[in-house]
Length: 65
Image 1 (cartoon, one colour):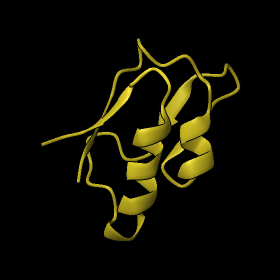
Image 2 (tube, helix red, strand yellow):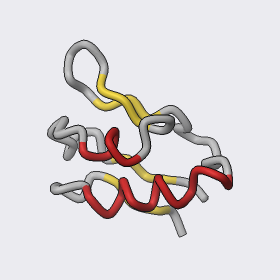
Image 3 (cartoon, one colour):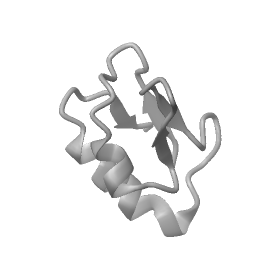
Image 4 (cartoon, helix red, strand yellow):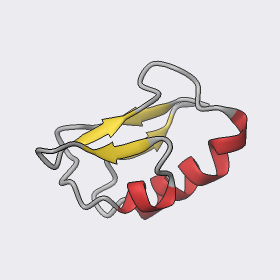
């Protein structure tokens, strides 16, 4: 699975971090860092990443088809 991140849309709420801290973090400037940009999410993390996609209040995250 791959994830699309709309960094322009992200407002830094951090809800994705609470769901999938191994995939997402906020840097010192409060901006989102996605740890698998351009790479597949490891299979054992897919459920957590899907949960993170689901909780984003501004729909900045989506699963690639």
